[in-house]
Image (tube, rainbow, N blue to C red; front, top):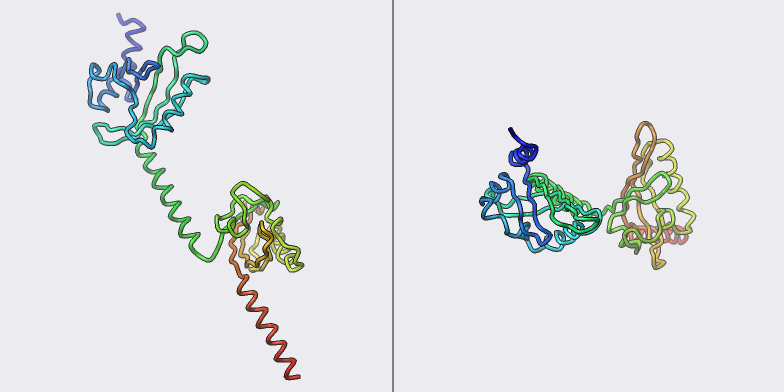
Length: 264
């Protein structure tokens, strides 16, 4: 007749998850068959060897930082380990918890791992695609932003931050704080308010902004409200620096007035 211990042992041995137990010094005390199959070694070869050797040096600091949590509350951690297996390089996501002796003395650690290679590979691909997309977006004339109905900025492209002379998560929070005192800005602000109220796109308009060092410049604004359940919940748009263009336009206007004066 099986004892409770035998039944527990059988359950652990049949698990497809990788289950290991290791000492506070990092030496393996127990490995289940799934882990043996993963690394292509027997229990006898693994017991006493170092668990979680770092294959990629760039992950060493990350893994070490996580493992420190096993020796202080909450005495648990999650860590991803890229390791060489019978199937090649795989990412194993481990959930580890310390077994305590008394209040805070770690006598051993149990870790349960699963192969998360596909998920991590997909995440890397998405991150790579996002970086490439952002590079394409940021390489054009348009500079992108979004803000709440209360004018709080929740995304500002790096090029806009550079233009304004502000750092991420620093400086002014309201986009209206960057408006100059030029009376022409009132018309632009009115268009934003109308778009938020109606939920419809307004024609492009121009604003004069002030950078962190006090320089003023002109931008052309194209924006559209984001509407959910009939209500505008945000504004997304793009800016184009038209300072030089505006100076040319003003110069042409002055020249036109001068010519008309000469003809009079």
